Amino acid sequence: MEHLVRQRKSICRLIAYGIICLYVCLSGCELVTTQTPKTALPADSVIIETQYLPNYRDTLQSVYLSQVGVRETTGNNDGTEVEAYLKSTGLGKGYAWCASFVTWCHIESDIEAVKSAWSPAWFADTSKIVYRKSWINTNYTSQPGQVFGLYFNSKKRVAHVGFIYYEDSDNYYTIEGNTNTAGSREGDGVYKKIRPKKSIYIISDYVTP
Image (cartoon, rainbow, N blue to C red; front, side):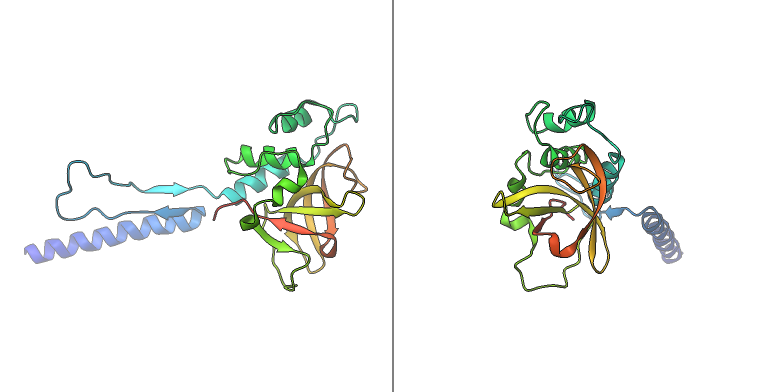
């Protein structure tokens, strides 16, 4: 009889766990669990309870897509949203803000990343670089939320940054601050752009899987 009771309890536990796993799969969350040992735990032990991990890449994408359409107030690197971007890097209105926009989006997504209005700073940490134009690998596949950099010969450095949110065989679809319909690095708002892959100099990724 006891054997049947234990067997039924085991089946119930399996069914319950199966329901939880199904819920996690449908909700798109990762499930982190720990099993409670059958033996007694020391008094100072800490049990990590079941928790759901946020999808930071999706969050970041939601944040920067929500900013598309923001425009400067007078065309002089100003306006409520633009000044909020600049404030995230310790600056006031009037400064170029493409990198500040990238910083602000990471902060809003609770992602630890660069806090700088200087575009090259987004590629200073080589461990975060996932693509360079000079690399032989031409089959690189990007991920939403990665940061791209454009190199300007006139500046002799990366001088414009933005987010990749999609790609096809020839182009990256991007979200960029301080640009315009022409794709300038000194624009008037946040725009969706299409950049040829061959124009992208470098890509970094600050989203932890």
